[in-house]
Image (tube, rainbow, N blue to C red):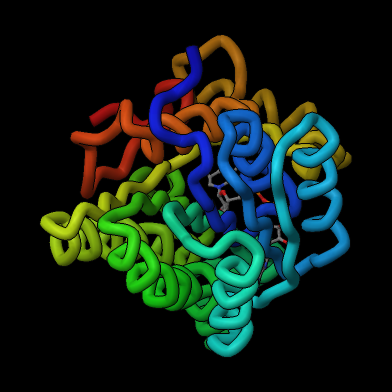
Length: 256
Ligand SMILES: NC(=O)c1ccc[n+]([C@@H]2O[C@H](COP(=O)([O-])OP(=O)(O)OC[C@H]3O[C@@H](n4cnc5c(N)ncnc54)[C@H](O)[C@@H]3O)[C@@H](O)[C@H]2O)c1
């Protein structure tokens, strides 16, 4: 038996070309959702959509930029043109390249701070702003945002990343509070170290994995499918009484 209530639902995966977003798009496709894969990288988004279609699912791909409000509106217009509705939203995109300059409070360039806030935090505001009216028209919906263990754990580097991810928790509680009575649930997942294809192919992979294992209770690091499973559950009717939460999916990295 699959998760309940997902078959036929239209989900927008905002950042679904690679990594956790792509794995979740494929999982939701396998659960019977009609999947709109949006990403800055349209070619890779098309590949994710083709993977879903290749195993009998339904998907469409669109290029868009979390930094560009007009392109976000076009993504949702594309979803409506393709499938006539939006029931579910998974916000997962993030500018990971900008993190190279996310050094510390004394050193970080304001351009880097602003870029990370614009893509990783403001982008989620704009996608939710675009999605909520469509969900209200359907009598409800579910949103899952992507935070991070970095929002909780305190690190000597990555202040902008951590602040943006902590802000996502606040935005999540706001949306859950504002539209809960209208049938819209809003949660977030906070992954720990997750071995995406990008991370696994890094030259320093063995050291990264060993360092990550020291920070968690699990005997293994995370896989994108571990996060996808939680997102699918939260979006399904099996998660119907869960809202306003930030769920740690991290092999026991953050205990609280
Ligand atoms: N992998 C981990 O260990 C880990 C841990 C905690 C949190 N996360 C979070 O999970 C999410 C996915 O990360 P991932 O590791 O799968 O990385 P990833 O780089 O594979 O995926 C990020 C996706 O976002 C897209 N993207 C980047 N900038 C964009 C923009 N301006 N507009 C639209 N799309 C854009 C990328 O093209 C990519 O497809 C991110 O929010 C990340 O912060 C990841």
